[in-house]
Image (cartoon, rainbow, N blue to C red; front, side, top):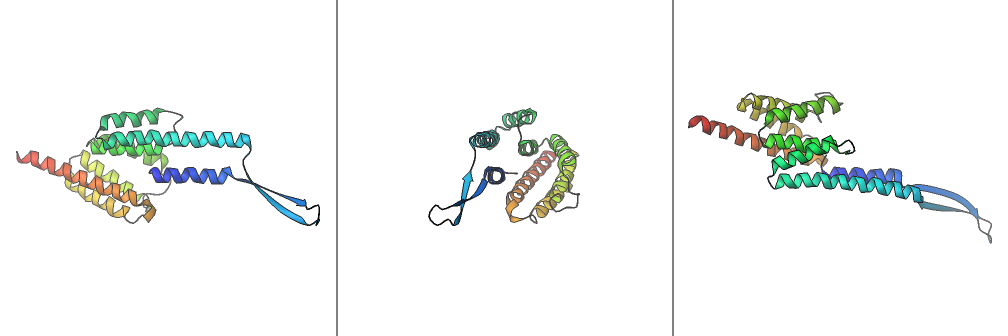
Length: 202
């Protein structure tokens, strides 16, 4: 889930839980006709509760952005420690996002064994759809190419990275960012393959 999806989720929660509509009927003193009065809002206690929830959500997004900022600066070790600390924090709720960034960091650093371990555990614990489901196919292909990369089989790794990219392109347009991520991962893997080949030629 990226930043956009997090914000959409927050707004949805506010809309769903935040609006309480009270409809009451009263009579006009002059006409004695019934009129409907709609009061939309929150009680003070409800306002305080949802204000805290909203503040907490934005704070967590800010913590995620701190980590992604470190990533964009090339400070991958610092970013990895930051996300691991978030995952260790029992109060932090956006663990799925932190975990996804940590996997990307490991893959970027070509620590494919660590990336595979975290991703594999995530799939086993959190994925409810079967492996053949369109939303899960790219992840299954990612697990395969990570396993091949661990074994040094870069030809097969690149092949399955391409399959992961193609599968991600079949996802809804709202998940376009996922496809772009798989494109970057494929490029990184190709670069890793070329680097290994260059070493063999020396």
